[in-house]
Length: 102
Length: 476
Image 1: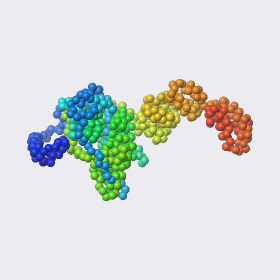
Image 2: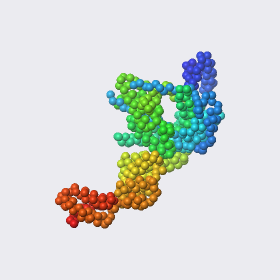
Image 3: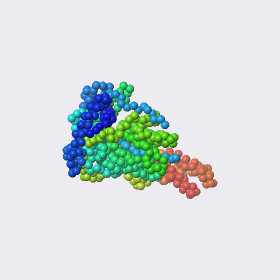
Image 4: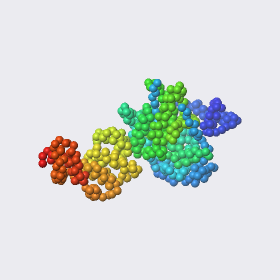
């Protein structure tokens, strides 16, 4: 199945990945292979098969609303590379300062 | 050209469960950051989320009360997006098979009752909290995984005022149903709006903008008023409305554009493989239906009919379910709805507001207040005296009789006790009596004042006036 470079770029952007031109080309090939493989399902006769949303037949699995012990702040933050106080710190991701002009 | 406003609201209500939607981490506000987190809500590899049964039942309860059609089969989906407020890089939500569709919320408008139709109600998990600083965004995941219900209305609202009425009605319903504490400051009730304008008479909808970050009911009304004004001015000036997501800034009272907005297909929804689907249990639904409380609007209408209350008084009373219960108990004991309503909306509400306490902590129980009101109703206590007794009840557990005694006694309504005092005044004020008989009707007030003075203000005014007339007529 054919895939445009622009589509690969878009998918990379949705995952917040910056790819070089050679990477784009490499992943385009790999993605096409995957899609072609999945496309082979179209060869099957699925006329009589109902669509389903899950691989297993199990339904209605619930848990009671009872609290468990959380990990605790120190353990939660133990593996992070960048921490400020009790929070994770990540690069600023949103800019909301552009006031809409009338 | 005249324009009309078209608004649809998306309300996120935090379900009043003890734990999160898919794990047992406690749901609490204002705790140490990242202290209510476990491998499941952190999205660590190999974990298995499981649906909180209470969250599902609360959602069902809400949908039944809203008159939604319940799906016989429902499932969860992954909404994929990369943003640090959710560590999994997807949010568990419901996409094409929400558990409830349709339904409506009735609101009051100047033109009468209006039914606001709902598109759907679905369950999802909340994201974590981000604080943006110049040096980076700070992530607290305590809120990540908190159970939410998203209630989406049709664009049936025609003004910012209607949007506010809708929110108020919905909030009351959720409170009566005990499925959400509706604390907007703590974010347990949040609202996004879609707004467009169109020339009056035009069928097709205009281009809409989505407005986020409105943190109060008055904020919603203000933000929508602002945005409607902006859109109309833009169109009148010959401009076009661009589809955008806007952030409302309460402090500056204006909106700003959020930089990017992904399209629905960019979320690449797919069925959540870690959660099993849910098949509707008809018996459970019937049980929930049977256990529904009287809803606020029904109660509002019943209060007007049963207790002869004005729309306004009935509304003040039903706003808070506990206050409405207090009122009904009181009205039942006193047998006088109007009197009970006056006291609850005035004296009782004043105390609750002043002390910022819930009805359950009111220092004067409905039982105790009913004793007082029965004396008012029978004429044993004047309104003024009753007010004083009520004030002293706030700080004392003494019996009603003791309190009245301490304040100088109750109202005197017995004509046999009052008659000698009136006769005394007639004797002392012969000149005034003569004036009155000579046609100076106004002088009656002077006589009345003298008699009331002798009773130290405790004489029943009606009885005293009656006795004065009686004696004047008898010519003695």
